[in-house]
Amino acid sequence: MVPIFWLALRRGPKIGIFAGAVLGVVDLAIEPFVVNPAQFILDYPLAFACLGLAGFFRKPAIAGPIIGVVVGGTGRFLSHFVSGVIYFPNYAPAGMSPILYSAIYNATYMVPSIIICAAAIVLLQKSKTLNIYL
Image (cartoon, rainbow, N blue to C red; front, side, top):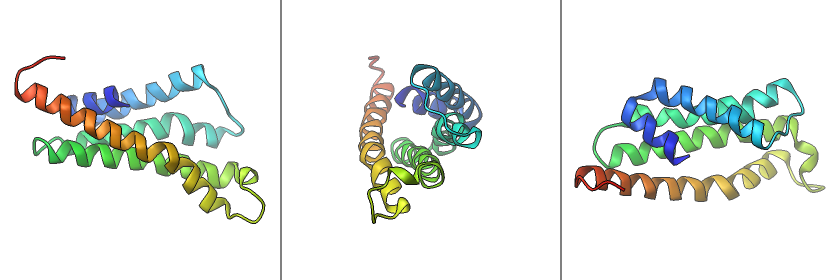
């Protein structure tokens, strides 16, 4: 996700959203799991397009990009969450709400991903500011 966040923060939300949607289609090609056309849209192009929302938070130098990563990552989480509630409720253990299950399942990988991406973006921002290229 870091390259999409970085692209969105450097070039703006329009390019970031487009690149995220393309990444979603690439992810589909690598590891497809489709049960419904609407689920396909929620889990692939829409979820990854949300990463491009980071482009709306380009300024100030450090706080803006962190907020952008959190907003973009949260958008992706919400897209997967809705898909999980609607299309995968049978994966929830007996007696557990599909809403709670989808929230827990998606948070287990999205929260760490958002934190790692935010740290990576901070490092990239600092290297850009110091004119050090990775």
